Length: 323
Image (cartoon, rainbow, N blue to C red; front, side):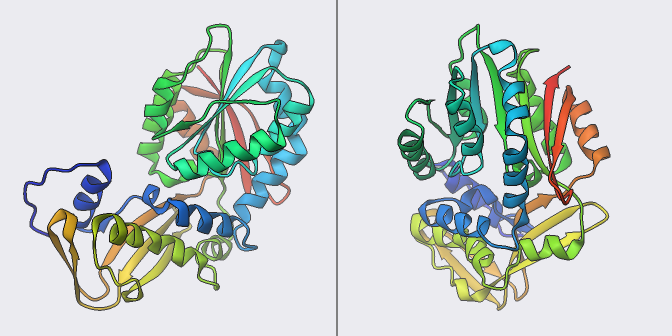
């Protein structure tokens, strides 16, 4: 393990990078994949034929938009549509267009850690759906949720699409869902996307495309460290690697050092040593079955209201209510 010293951090990014790279085994959070370059790379990933998740959820929202919208506007009540990790909003726009065309009374409140993604999303919605009221929130999910203003007579519909729940271990997912439950009233809804267990090769292909887009996305975290913290990571000396355990449904992404090397992070006054074939764990992508989703809901104080599946049964969107 890297020897740790006392460091005064100016940002959470600095602290997370320091702690992750001085730990054993080394690890970094996938949330730091995203900046202007990372956002663009992820949009390219979502357009890849191997990355079935986007098309699967897109199909669900397109096919069931009327049923989903009816659940959102139950009793013709106004509501706030709060989206965690909104990104470019490509899939959400299916629902936004239907709601806008139906003259439904609601406010769309996208939350994202990337200000760049939020700015692009806000501009595109203003252009495509000028009737929709948009209230953007930049930051982590719960910091932003704390500051969201919802009138007492308005329901909350919380969206968490793209199987982002899969970026958490089960214990973390329960804690995450439990935290959301605390912000919910009995009449509120939580709409979550879950990627299902399937042919292991299909899953591996989705996270390790032959064109190298996913590898570039994974390595973008090193580029961010180089740029923001004045480090000298050689991206060519790291290999993107993906694994999948069909028993647990856990896919994991790694950056693997291909040589013995030392990396200097000037802003942290830190030298990091890597042995050849040493790893940095960067992402988890959990896959689910019915039993696991029910277990998560039960432990988070939620009940399943209904669910929607794509034609291949690759993916499901669940709607939850507070118990």
